Length: 212
Image (tube, rainbow, N blue to C red):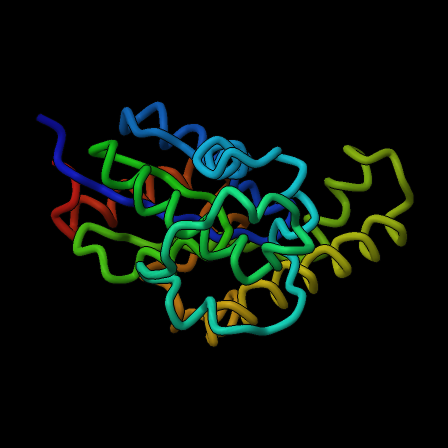
């Protein structure tokens, strides 16, 4: 039987977080959830996936959901079928419940973003990672991918990362990208790219005793 593991990956845009997560999923035989988590949350609640999209890693109005997101809101009623009724805090709470359920259902899971490191913080087999890379390098690469100017790419990165940071800080009361919030922070450029990042994470997991 596989040793249980919950791996969470936070990432800057263009730092290779999703590619690293996919490779680790294959290497560790682990279930990986990124945007798929929204579909799981929708199936769990009986709501349309589109209900979750506007709130995906975007903060709105503060409520009490973050205080209970570790494990706690009661089930949502069938009558709460619209985003305007649910509110973003309840959507976050529902997504948190789904995250816990998925982690319990599979011996090994990888969650990308969505405050997973905070939501699952009480799980004993949790290891949280944050992947970064120099802004200049990410800007140059994404300008090619998006087929836009470096200036346009940089502006888009900064806007998206502000939303991502606001979402994380809003729900966790921690600071997105701050080394104090994670078990391991890696500069992908410093270690040599995505393959090296994968090896660093695997090494750290072995040292922690989470994998053989």
